[in-house]
Length: 127
Picture 1 (cartoon, rainbow, N blue to C red):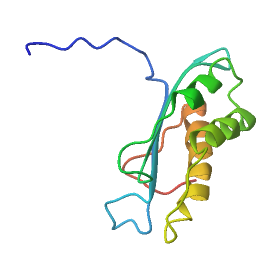
Picture 2 (picture 1 turned 90 degrees about the horizontal axis):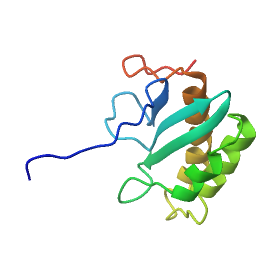
Picture 3 (picture 1 turned 60 degrees about the vertical axis):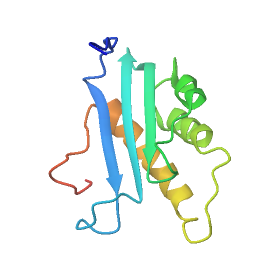
Picture 4 (picture 1 turned 135 degrees about the vertical axis):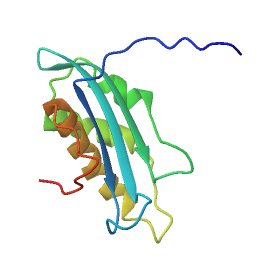
């Protein structure tokens, strides 16, 4: 392999990475959410959402991302996307709390990205 061509997609204005964990000293996330949005006049033109810490690999669902396309960037659209993204998700007893935690994290991350206020990666406090 000598090269890889990646298509340019401008998500530079509306993105975030949210990492939720028990304590700041822990390196691993209980739940993490990466969001990238491309907005056009208050509507979502394109969306990417990935969850970490909830499965054996990063969790994405194209139907949840597609459902955001053309939607107004608001709490109702974010809630619908979270419902789709987590449809069928089940805990394994000791980690049942991750499903509602992920639902809230998805909403928060989408709101941060839509507002153009990404989560600081040095100051982990959430305002």
